[in-house]
Structure formats: C-alpha cells, structure tokens
Length: 331
Image (tube, rainbow, N blue to C red; front, side, top):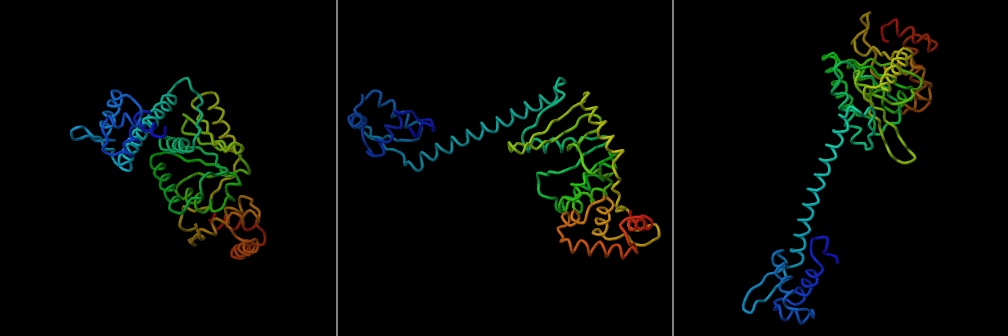
C-alpha cells in the first residue's frame, strides 16, 4: 500500500480512498460499500479522524475525507521532519563514535574514509599544533587550485603560527611545483608567511605531522573511487614517519625565493612575483616544458620569458643566472 510509509495501515488507506470517492457517507453506507462489518470500520474511521484525514458531523454521523492534497502532504511533511531528526541523531552518534575511537589509547592507527572527515582531521592537526607542522606536499590534489584569497588566508595562518612559535616545514615534490598555479597561489604566499620550504624530485607519500603527537597520511584509491587516510598516533610507526621526514628534509633543496624582504642587500628592488616564481622553478631544476605547464604558457612564451630574465641578469646560462640572482640577493 502506497501510504504505508506515512504511517497508515492497509485498512485506513482502503477506508480513506472510499471516503474520498463518497463524501458525507455514514458508517453503515461505507460498510455496505466495502463489504465489511460496521464495528471494526468505525474504529478505522475514528483513527482517520485522529490523523486529520477525515471529519465527522451531524445526525446520523456522516464522514468527510480531508482534501488529499492538503492532508497527505501534511503527513509527508511530518514524516520528513521525523526523518530529518533521525538523520541528525545518526550524525551526532557517528561523531561520538569517531571521537570515542580517536581518544582510545589502544588505537595507534585510525582509518578515515570520507572527504569531509579527512579535511576536518587536517584542519584539526594544523590548529592544535604547538611546536611545529611538518608536511610532505605532492599531487594528486582533490580540490581546485587555491585562489589568491585562499592563499592569503594560508599565509596569515602561518604568520599567526610563527608568532605563537609554531614552525611550518614543508617539502614539495617537483610535481607540486609544476601543478598549475600552485607555486604562485599556494607556495610563494606560504613562504612569505614564514613557511620553511624545500623541494625533492619526488616524495614517497603525502603526509602532515603535528608536533610529536600524530600524523595523517592520505591515499587515493583511484580504482575504487575511494579516498581514505590513516591517522597515526604516537607509536613505533609514528616514530618511523618522523624519521622519514627528517631524512628527506636533510636531502631536500631549500626553496628560498627571497620573497620576504622588500629589497635586495644592494638596495635594488626585488623582482616581481612572476620573476620570483620563474627563478624558483629554474633553481628547482624544472624543464621548459614543466615551467610552461605550471604557468599555463606556450613553449614559445616560456622560452621568451626565460631569455628576458637571463638578459636582465646578464647571464648566458641558467647556472650563471642562478649565481647572479643569488649575488643580487634575489634568492
């Protein structure tokens, strides 16, 4: 029966349909029409009145069905409110369940299996840091590239952490530097905010470590379309992750663009942001093709801008350009 989802029994639905077709009928007339006994039918009619699906009046008592478009829609709205309350309760219980597992001392590793939970965990790790945040940053990324406003917010957050004595150390893979617009809108603003950035040709995984307390490792299970992450608390595995980061850090190349100071030691102005970005990519060893991909340029435009930069520096090779830029205080 279609109305059972709204809390109506089969008998109530059957009698209500008869009332809709025979407005003002008596219980006796309905009993004859439905070929049922009058006693049980009166109990069903009383139930319909209680549910505001029918009214009764007069002598002898006659029953009138409430308009279906109003009465049934009211039942639908009531059920929707009940379902919404049940859904809210489910969310609350799920959060209690997750929190209970997170604080369980026996759990060294917790698996997170939805994007919102993973994003919340990342934000929580960063906000609760008291000493340092260490990051392996490498593609793939699951959100669109950050705009300038989002990048400024990141820089502001890092600056606030710097004031509180929280250091940010980030190792970027070469692929991260070539990710479209990431250098300009994500990395350079973060460095200006006080982030210590270094670069490795490749990284074994994505990771964020908070103090000496916990780490988050996201994974992309692309075949199944599932994104998962592992939250690792203090344990031998966590100690190994710390050692992995520190080992990669010692081998990584500093990604210092000189973007913090407004002018070079000799008093000359720093280059503009595009030139800083180009220098950073050159010093990171990116090819012309990779630089073009990162900036959305054609190969010809990339070659021309590199030549313009080398001409400005008075250099004939990239190595010489790097040396001159460092002497000028651009790096």
